[in-house]
Amino acid sequence: MKNHFTKTLQEFEYLVCFDLAKFETGVSVIDIKDLTHPRVKEIRQISIDKNEEEPYSEFFDKLNLYFKILETKIPLDKVLIIREKQPSGHGATTTIATLQALAGVHAILDIVIHRYNIYEYEDGIHASSVKAWAREVTGIEKPQKTDIKNYLIKKYPEILNDSQEITLDISDSIALAECLINRKWNADIKEEIKEKKKKLKELKLQIAKNKIVEAIEDLQKKLI
Image (cartoon, rainbow, N blue to C red; front, side, top):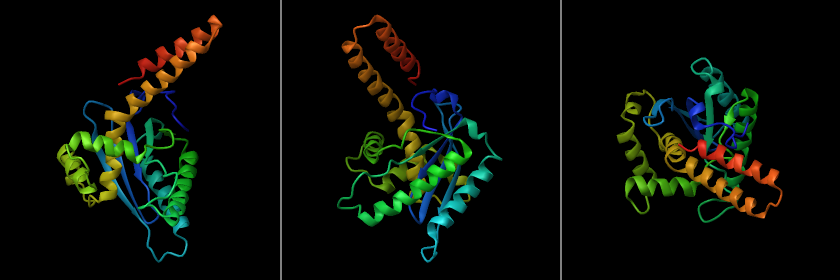
């Protein structure tokens, strides 16, 4: 289910974040019951053997098993899924083959989310938003994945106590949560309010105007 600001962020207790790839996917569970002090509850690396004959089937099985175990630990109705938004086109660093592989794992995540009836933050967070957040918090003009990882380890020292290795895929998944909480959530709501105010100016019927005003007021209450 897409959460198009139908619920406040405070109504969720956990963010489950995915840095998706065909063979190596980083996953993190962020406890957001206190939004001013979120903490990393769990990290995981979902790995698929590159010699696997049916990698997508293997990924589906592992992802499904992950959620089966997760629902024994936390209430899935209090979870909001976040993923990095799938690229819309190929470029210097993204080939058509990479896009096809990403499309496959994104589709599998869609299926599993639907199976467990979990809320998701739109269709993901664009990489450019994460980069903008990273520039702000690290003070580095062109932060690399290792810079982001080092920043997150300092902010969330608890992840060092996990037996799981902190891969760049895992740190990238945690960065999605950081970006959502500290940048994207409010920015997206403000953009939505801006669009509704434009629409308000075009309306003539008072009853229609009232509905837009109510929608704007509701959105303003959802800011964090």
